[in-house]
Each structure stands twice: as structure tokens, then as C-alpha cells.
Length: 239
Image 1: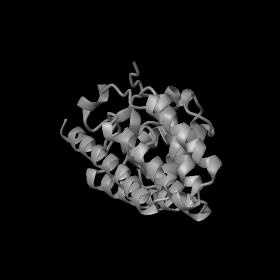
Image 2: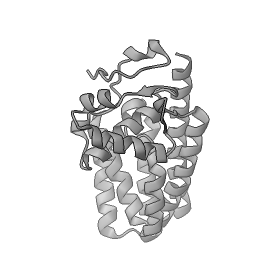
Image 3: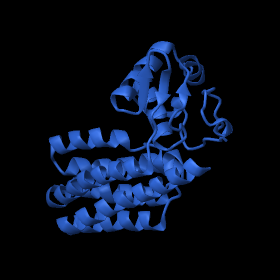
Image 4: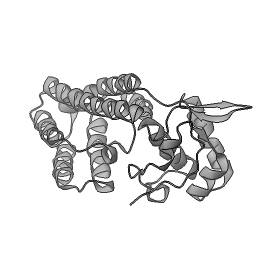
């Protein structure tokens, strides 16, 4: 069981003891630099409501929890400030800005549009080798256990579709948009039965070169995820 031990100064004291098994530990994160892993972990906590708006972030406490020096933590917080997720003020320190359910819906709507276009072009442009790999990944995804295995399998599946679109500028936009989507979403939200079905539909439409149908499924897949997260955030705000 994952229990938070980072001593944030909370406006909502009742929230300080919440169990947060919704994120993989920093040591388990795949690839990336120390700063990037810190950014991802803190961003996920903000985007899933684990760190509520108004939460004061303590640099030393974060460094202690993550087992890293203050420098990468300071750099991570600065990057998050550029993304509008924390506010850095000389006197009040670093404060989590947080995210509202409406903002989560907006973020997922943007991501859905880009993902839909990627699926549309993938259906038109995917190579036989990439299609075979996508089909293999779909099987792996359907059998993956909830947790890190599912998160990685899902990431690999959608990465293949995005790359099969053959549009480097679209990939760049997707990388920008995904920064406002929690990377640990599948560790937070229950897996829907429709998720597996939508993955299978997506592969089927791409295999048949039905670009319009592939785009529709991809967009709905992401929008449904946004609805789930927005509902989660709404529940957290009144808990």
C-alpha cells in the first residue's frame, strides 16, 4: 500500500492523511531525468486532485520524500509554474493552483481532438508492420493487470497509433496537450468495460482503413476518460 509521507502544509487539514495509491513511486517511473520524474509525480498529484488548490508545497519535504536534492525539485516547481499548475510567490512560497472539473473536461477535449486526428491519419497511413504491432499491443493491453502494467501497455498502444499517423507536428501538439492529462489516470480511475471494447474497435477500424470511424472512437475514448476524471475531482472537492 502506498501511503503519502510528504508533509504538505494544507489549507484543508482533513486531507493531509489521505492514502494516495494513485501514483507510482518516483523510483518506479520509467526513463526521464530526476527533474522530469519530479515534474510528472507532482503534476499527477495536482491533476488528480491529490494536491488541492491552495496546498502549500514544502521544498524540503518534497526533497525528503523523493530522495533527491533541492535543485531538481526547485526546477520541477518552476516548470509547473510555467504550466499554470503552481503559483510561486516571494512571501507565500509555492502554492498548488489545482484544477477544476470544468478545466479537466477542457483539457481532455483538446486531447481528444488531437487523438482523433492521429487515429484518422493512422487508419490511412499505417504500415503492415505497425498494424501487426498494434494488434499485438491490443492483446497485451486487454490482459494487463491494473497498475503499472496496464499504464505502460496503454501508453504503448496509443503511442503506436500516434506515430502511425506519420505527422511530426501533430505528435508535437499531442506531447504538449498530454502534459495536462495525468499520466497515472489508469491507476486512479476504475477501468471501464467500454475501454477494452473501444481499443478493439479502434484496431478494427484502423485495420479496415475506416478513418472516420477510427477518429470517432478515439475521440469518444478520451472524452469518456475526461468525464470520469471530472466526476472524481467533483467528489474530491466535497469530501
